[in-house]
Length: 219
Ligand SMILES: C[S@@+](CC[C@H](N)C(=O)[O-])C[C@H]1O[C@@H](n2cnc3c(N)ncnc32)[C@H](O)[C@@H]1O
Image (cartoon, rainbow, N blue to C red):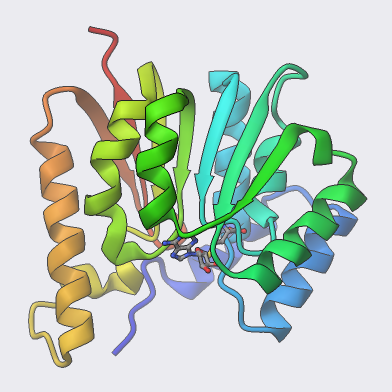
């Protein structure tokens, strides 16, 4: 059974305290709901925007663009010199994201790569560095992606990983089906390896579906 990480009343109250969504975000949310496309919750979009304001990154990497809701939440808060590289493997979603980027006026700041991150990240890690990474693709891949992300992240840089509580399944050890069992195992392994990684400081925030914030130590 799927669990809510926060009680629904509490979630609704938190949302009532957020600023109104802009026109494009409202359109993206409508499309995501109608087409069953998973996107960040409003409170997570808000957190991402604030983290970008605080960190003032020069180069953001996003893995899992979908239709670009989180990309734009970050782009709107980027300093003028900042850039985002975002990776999506689904062509229809990537086309819709590009449409929204152009509507928003932030298209120049965002490079959208249509690729499977499993193949693309090792190539990217040979040539690029980033100071802010938002990880929001297949949840079973976080552990595999991490060595590439670690290679690309500058000291002091942030990795934000979304949905790390897997709708609450992360504590479900009864494992009723194989797919969920694999997800739970892999996510727990990821979370525990991050806890034990001496190169990173971290905080797991039970907002939305669980947001893990990792900061690479300066030395
Ligand atoms: C949760 S959605 C991203 C939502 C988006 N970050 C937002 O909040 O607006 C995850 C996306 O990751 C994409 N994805 C999953 N595995 C991927 C991979 N290996 N490479 C690239 N994209 C992937 C899926 O197609 C999906 O659109």
